[in-house]
Length: 273
Image 1: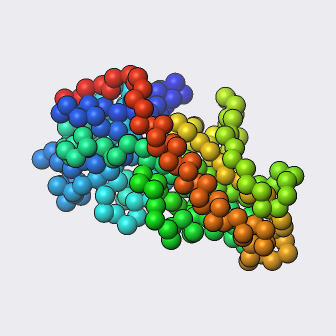
Image 2: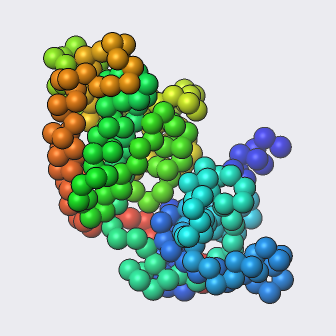
């Protein structure tokens, strides 16, 4: 019985080919439920959705998990909550024509993380807010995740080619010093993640357990001065680095997007029809 459920829980391929179009996480599709579908599915007939994952059952059939493109609660669907995430067979979705139904290549997530109630620990959140108020880099998506580690792990299941974490981390350097790290994740580590805490390495481990990690991962760290003196404000040396950190993040994003534009060999996707 345990072996059966292990097989049933396995994720499908990264993408499948439907009507000659590659479809995978991030693809935009139109829902075309079969005539025998239930009433709720029929209500969604013709709606545009975004593919979150491709699942495969024990008999080899593919099931496409989607969220509605215009659903204001799409993040809840990404977190796999009922009512915002739906399953359709490959025969019930129609790939959209633009860019082969897939998003523009080279999407990079910038995740501002930290606790704004712990002084300098809110550095990543402040950088995310700063970036949100500037002209962005094409393909860059900036999100303030705060301490929502579980939400970030699920967000990483989407079709991002890279992710840049922005955080405060003590490394024994002068306050305000910026450092760029490339995390090294040891194999076989299943340490649990705190659902209301944020540790980039633990989040990455959970994301890998859920099924996928972006190919490129960087962490922009700022040396904190204090997380206790003023629980609601960044210290002077840390606040002074917000703009410079934002510029550094943009340069990293542009590098990742340029790297992702280089074609690489991939296993061909299964053809569904």
